[in-house]
Length: 140
Image (tube, rainbow, N blue to C red; front, side, top):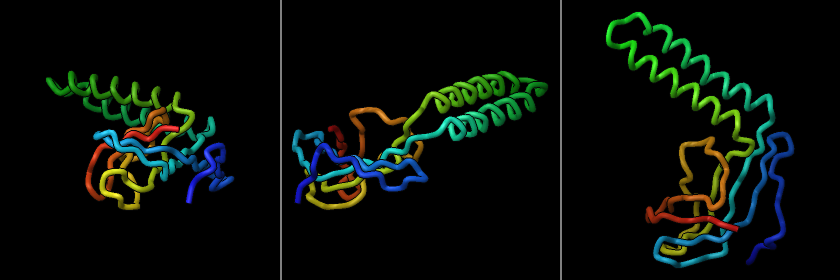
């Protein structure tokens, strides 16, 4: 049971979801070749909508608390952080959707925890085993 490492499977044509076979390395140095990553390509429209949400929330909340004494300092910082997050979302062309495979440490098959979602896709991908909690590095 192995992967063709040159193969990339398109899971959903409408979602721009791509499944990529990868190698897994645990923190202890153990490796395994049975894993996958799902990467989602975002259109310009999707990126603009996500970035726009952050801009609007930052400006509304930051602007709403601008005239409250002492709170306006934190509201201004909140607005700047949300605008920065919006810019980061605008730049992210591909995001990590999910990952899974066989953990090299506990030998259990399942999903890996790769974050709370919409993380920018970069190699190597850092993940955590859902069974034993060991840190994993996913790479091609």
